[in-house]
Amino acid sequence: MKKLINKPENVVREALEAIAIAHADLVKVSYDPNYIMRADGPIMGKVGVISGGGSGHEPMHGGFVGMGMLDAACPGAVFTSPTPDQMLEATKAVNGGAGVLHIVKNYTGDIMNFEMAAELARAEGIEVEAVVTDDDVAVKDSLYTAGRRGVGVTVLAEKLCGAAAEQKRSLKEVADMCRKAKNFGRSMGMALTSCTVPHAGKPTFDLPEDEMEIGIGIHGEPGRTRMALKSADEITEMLMEPILSDIPYKTGDEVLMFVNGLGGTPLIELYIIYRKAQEIAAKHGIKVVRSLVGPYMTSLEMAGTSITLLKMDDDMLKLWDAPVKTPALRWGA
Amino acid sequence: MPVYRDDVIAWIKSVAQMIAENSSYLTDLDSAIGDADHGANMERGFKAVINKLPEVSDKDIGTIFKTVGMTLLSTVGGAGGPLYGTWFLQAGMKTAGKMELTLTDWTEALEASLNGVVMRGKAELGDKTMVDALTPAVNALKQAIQENQPIHVALTLSANSAQKGMEATTPLIARKGRASYLGERSAGHQDPGATSTYLILKVAAETWQKSI
Image (cartoon, rainbow over all chains, first blue to last red; front, side, top):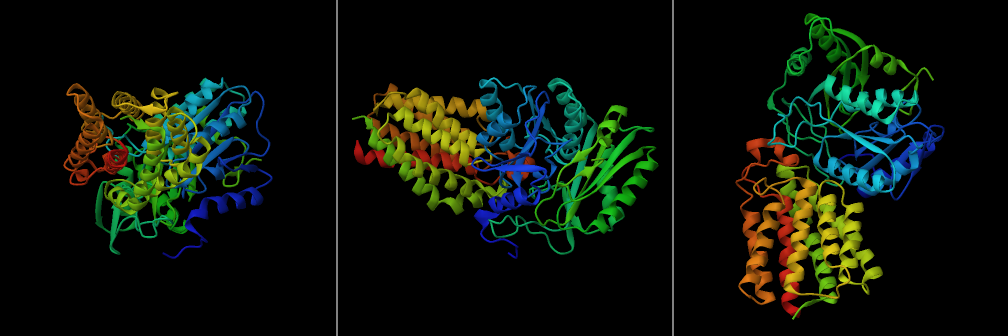
């Protein structure tokens, strides 16, 4: 294992200490329990928007804390869900009296820890709504699985909900926006290489040099198929086809296209994926009206990409374009 | 003879040791069908429990269990944290104020734990989870009470039933948790959660065997 770390057990703590200093104008960091919150929070009368999850996906979620996006983010150990005391303390810290929205990715651990935190926060008199994102079309959604994983749509939902909360919309309205994003968005990813969890010390899975995993999860969960490596255009087709055939996107739809890097893939390759993806969308009569390209939801040093399409309406477009000022996403402010 | 408070503390300490010794084993089981963190998470949690234990070792068993539960909840993370946290919180509510446990007390506590875990994880028997080890362990205790078995026999029967339940998870297809993403590929692997549950109950039978 070759990594720029000191000790595996100090990885999250040292990163948090750095974030607190590097982005002191935007965020403040609390320890024991760990959470990152807006430097100017809590904002009275504004719905608090919180997310969280295992570390190792940076900039998600801590990089999205700031004006126009998240009020707080709770980082767990690497690839391990944060604990209820983190979300409880973060919920209390950002509560401006208008309630708090929890944006939760659909993983068994995340669901249970956020549920317990929401119960505890409600017991303390704070209004909490939780919305679970589950946009990964690689996973069969059925009664017999934990359901689809929450991936790329989560980042987009955080931006839209953050902007909605900034306009002082009600908790129900902000939660409705999250549900809309969840219902209108779909994603699929693939990996060229595995990643190595620092405390595990060895790659999560073996992937031969000439093979790839289609439908990978952001923790290295296995996907749909493993096959011989193909060209970027062919890979893009393999990711776009299941997305487009999942929710009935139809001719004339306007979408936001998010081509995400999983950590080890350079931006230039992500643009090559984007080029083909928007061409495929155009062929289906789907208009890409907004784009996000870059490593925003990573899986440590995994090489690979994921594509997310989110069907947009006028309200969502306005919220997407609204000012945002966070360590990882910043425009109009 | 009942299980005294000091026996309960000895059990928790032995569990911590057993989890530490089996940390890699649990993580290896989890690598096959999960996300390779069960051993490390449980070890971190029980290490924190050991640090916390002196603060409550003069309190009643209910307080001790509740403290174990809260500590696991805030240190384990993943699915294991809420599930094992709930296990001990529920057991703590059932044993509030008690300084010793009869077989009936322990059975009721463990049944409350099982109900709490089922409610939190929404798993059913046969979903390839810790419920598959915990359910037969509780049933064995209930049956032992009906048959008027002495407590040391009941504990052994309970641990043996947990072991059978754990082993029976191997051919199952996971329907809950991260393993469920694998579908049929999850068959052929023993469930890590059922395994840690068995270890905890085995240690109870062994530790309390010596004292009662």
